[in-house]
Image 1 (tube, rainbow, N blue to C red):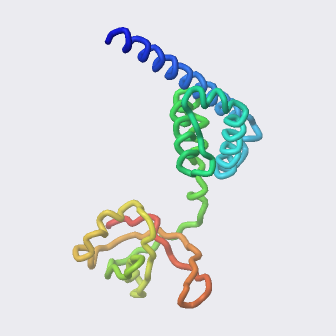
Image 2 (image 1 turned 90 degrees about the vertical axis):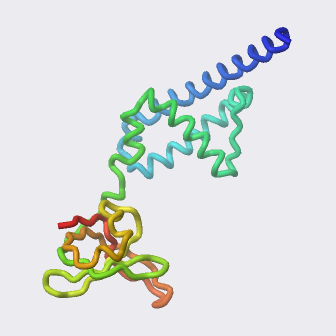
Image 3 (image 1 turned 120 degrees about the vertical axis):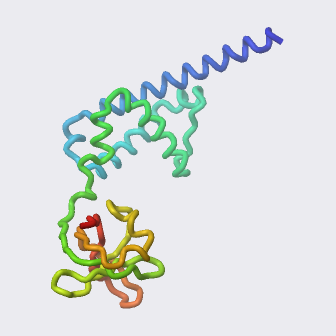
Length: 197
């Protein structure tokens, strides 16, 4: 029995070493690629696109090494490519964390919008598919805000019965949405933060 286990463990350790070796190689190459000035000057979306092409090219050039290490990527499957990218990202975290943070969007495009703040009292939450937060502003005018995604302060809104009459500052941005009812694009006020006063 011991004679059978020893060769199996040896084969597994060789396979793990070769997999680690090629994954280290691609992580190093990716870090070097991302440190080029022309790449650093791109937006995070452009960097992500370039990175995907770089990884595809690197994989194609070293496909035999990857396959002998047990790494097979099916580029027709989004999940397979995503898992490959995540594995490389984990390796990169120890090699070039600053570049990885830049890629992750520390200069994210989601922060590139003009925001507005309005003060008022919460009246209600309405809507079926999407929720709208209704408030009465300090001038007595009713305002309606789209609750589209998670934002700072949204957790307190989940219990809609307990929010009526609470004074708030609502930070919002203008978002363009398609209205199937009107058959045109409309501008809505999307909440990005709510502060309870």
